[in-house]
Length: 260
Image 1 (tube, rainbow, N blue to C red):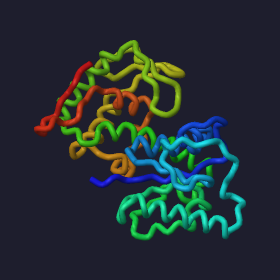
Image 2 (spheres, one colour; image 1 turned 90 degrees about the vertical axis):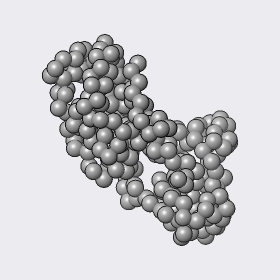
Image 3 (cartoon, helix red, strand yellow; image 1 turned 180 degrees about the vertical axis):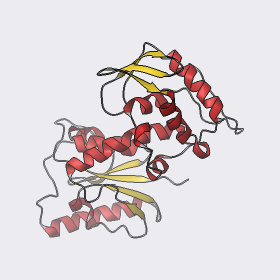
Image 4 (cartoon, rainbow, N blue to C red; image 1 turned 60 degrees about the horizontal axis):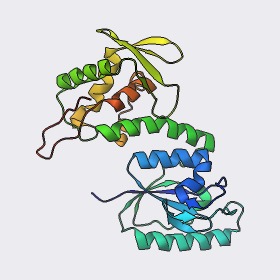
């Protein structure tokens, strides 16, 4: 399978010391969310820098005060021509590219010949932050489950054994919200405490489990396409499922189950 890439634009907010590009721009909440989302999905991240052009996320950079916003149209075009040349020198034609960048950083790029998508195009900064928060949980869970083949009945048994083993432990949510402490487990469901004590019914947890086992596992894109029902999308349910000790299939095709 060919690698897919994400292009994320640099930000005005930066750290004040020399560091890797991914750390330099992490001073911006928007960059942090975009980077977390892209890396969770296994995308190779390249950064569109107003000063350095196209750079890898691991490239060391010095702090600088420059942005394409407010630059003359001719200057932005020249910058885009140089970045386009760098992209074509680095990525083969047909490569999948996701754009997570402001319009000034993408509007003059010539990406013909590539498979380009822009999942947050047209959204305000606030809406982008919300979009990333809503999608990061699904991405992190589905990236672990993709490719797993298991009988649903067997999976439910493992699910219950794992839940019992987590009694008394606190499970952080994947991207937001207060952590949940598992208080008890019985035939009705799992009692947890965050802001208050509540019981999450097995019907809800099993429902999410069944969706994640559809056709031997699904990808993040599949989950978004299938519109995972809201009742299965709680931070606790997704976090619990992400902690389950399932292993990917063995080389011979059989599924392994590991109980901690």
